[in-house]
Length: 300
Image 1: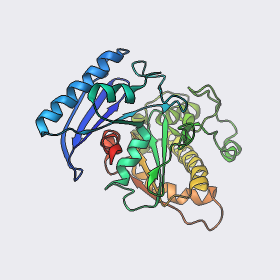
Image 2 (image 1 turned 90 degrees about the vertical axis):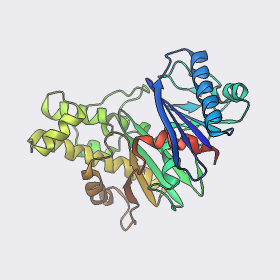
Image 3 (image 1 turned 180 degrees about the vertical axis):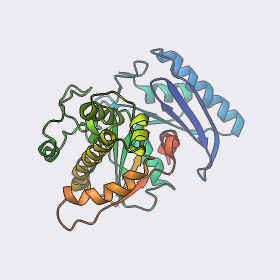
Image 4 (image 1 turned 30 degrees about the horizontal axis):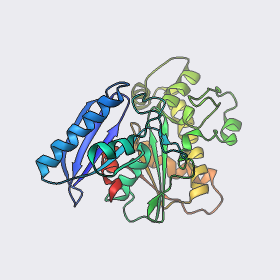
């Protein structure tokens, strides 16, 4: 059996899968703030209960929003004080008496899609999650690529392509949470979509409100969406040029928009070398469950 935990800022998802990757159990619980001991005990209790319920010692995987420090493998997750700077994998391995695998949540998302999902059978894949920020992950030759500093796939933090600033010279120059200016995710994320709408329309609106206004034919919403799609295509093309994947899998809160799968294949060629064969652009099969499912499957 495979046990997965997806640790978020407010919620932790827990799920159990059998050897055929069938979902056997799932639940959600509140993340215990900055209480590291409480977090460990919460995970310990769920693992012990699952072992008893299924009559086995399940393999444990943990997904989290952050990276691993390459020198000591401690977790770097500024938005999760309970685990930031901690050696969560090693500490849980000692507590549970078994190995515990840990990885970035975007990597878990793509790993899930490689196994029976939208990237099944592909030799190479790029995962991109479109939510509050932009997450990314790379799969090549049968394995996830973390990189020397665990930064492989962090496409949200390369700069917005200069071609976009040439097309839209009046765009704002926001500062990213990482401290740098004009990171791709500050425009391409759900937050970025809201920022663009404010720029074009002078009014704040949520992503869902903007989508509704697009469907209603509002001119400012249509202009915003057109710019946002062009930004997504340009930023995605940068990653495609580096990785040359067979498949791009989209996840996150905005990945369900049908217009993405219509417009990205149409716009990508304008940002790539002439004659490049496009990757398939697909919506994630496992949706919001991808992170916890991928965490569970880290031990495959």
